[in-house]
Image (cartoon, one colour):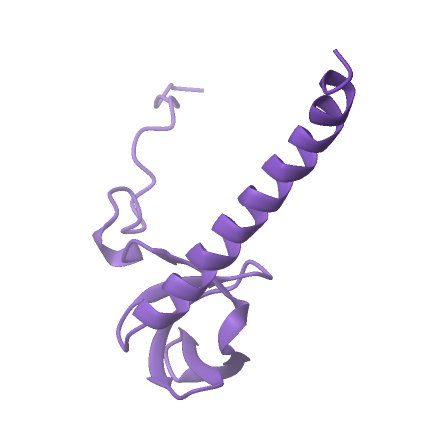
Length: 102
């Protein structure tokens, strides 16, 4: 019974420590897998395509002809190519509005 209280207090700390290490390992793995041509999202929420990489920076093309330089750790995740997503072609689709005579 005397060991119960320390275990109850240390278990959440151990779980937090393990989750933090996993998050760091995943971030390092993502940084190692970055490649030119991938579409990514930065920690600030900016979407772009990687056009150049070096050890410390990533050059993203965020619009045609617009390139930005970011610190490599600022890349939060790799996202799907936006050109391949359905519904992104500029077509508004059906909005529920109908043509009614006035």
